[in-house]
Image (cartoon, helix red, strand yellow):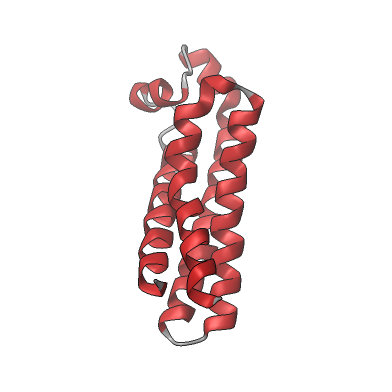
Length: 128
């Protein structure tokens, strides 16, 4: 079960690195604007600094999970589990906040929240 948790956490981290890239470096692209529902280039320009900052939050959550995975692989179970719980738990909670803010974001919340939620659940089973 630990390996399953590590794979799920790695996939969740990969999704959040991709979100980081879109928010921090590809925000002005029409394809990224479409993903985030940003209708105009002017709106994207206005929100660019906020998206850039938010992207780095996603990167830091991903890095937290990745360091946890590495520590788990090195048999440092307590520290690794703590970091995976913190990184993936924060990802899952952020998805919950997203959908709580507006049901219109349910699909986006599911895309960013299901993998980390499953990682947390399987890790809890593995370390119990």
